[in-house]
Image (spheres, rainbow, N blue to C red):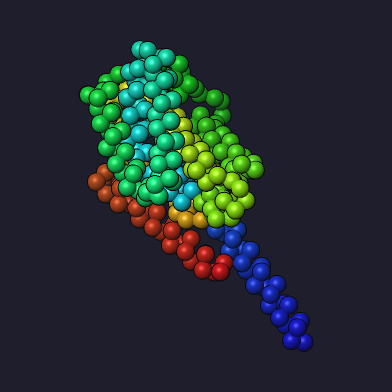
Amino acid sequence: MTAVSVQNGSKTFGRGAARARLLRGLLPALSLVLVLLAIAWLNPRAISYFGFGLMLNLVIPIALATIAQMFVISGNELDLSIGTFVGFVGCVTATWLKDAPLIGVLILLGSIGVYALLGALIHLRNLPSIVVTLGMSFVWQGLAILVLPKPGGKAPDWLLAIMAFKPPFVPFPIIAALLIGLIVHFGLMRTSYGVILRGSGGNPAALKRAGWSLLKTKVVLFALTGLFGVLSGMALIGITTSADANIGNGYTLLSIAGVILGGGEFVGGRVSPIGAVIGALTLALAASPLLTFMHIPPDWQVAANGAILIIVLAARVLISRKER
């Protein structure tokens, strides 16, 4: 009788833990659904092709910046320079890439190389990534001002055409966000090398014992961060049509919030590409449309975004305790 009771208790505990894990995985999607329901209740006309096109106008650069931050976080690091880097890329895109494409491409490739070198420096010298990337944020900001001292420039015509694409039935920002999430999910979560990259943050000691180079994984993760930061800056200029040295400054906190809102954690290499994109969608909808419909003044919108993030994190903590 005792053995049967223990077995039944184990099954009940297992089912409860499985439900907690499922709820934890669905939390980013539930957050997005709640934001959509609130928008539909406050302004039903916004739930349309045209409405989503306006509300999600900036979701592509936000999603790309969030994915860029996700690669660094998957290696137990943090990038505090991604916002100013996006601004620098925007200035290069609106000037050199427009007027001298070859030089512009070389500059952007060189900036990705700088990110790879940062990963090597952080690993070899055992430097805190927060300090290094914080210092680099001032470097990228200064370079952006040198490239474009005052707002101006113009996006290349081909970039404007891409970002102005209007497919039938589903707005382009939604399609692009889904493609970004699925492609990165396959590369990071479904390939053998993706497991190695995540392992550098989850269990670096075991990865090293298996013969893999932690230096190489760190360089690759930072290079991928630079690549998606470049794509984010280019997409942003394709939407705004012109550049400003400060145009991407808010993307640092948005990218971190998007990763965490999407189920990522600062330690252990636990990230979710699809969750990160969902987090970016949630922030894009909550950042302006939802709070505007609620008649919250712009000065309070940043605080409201922080409150949304805190609520989601509190729910995740409660679910994690139940899972344990």
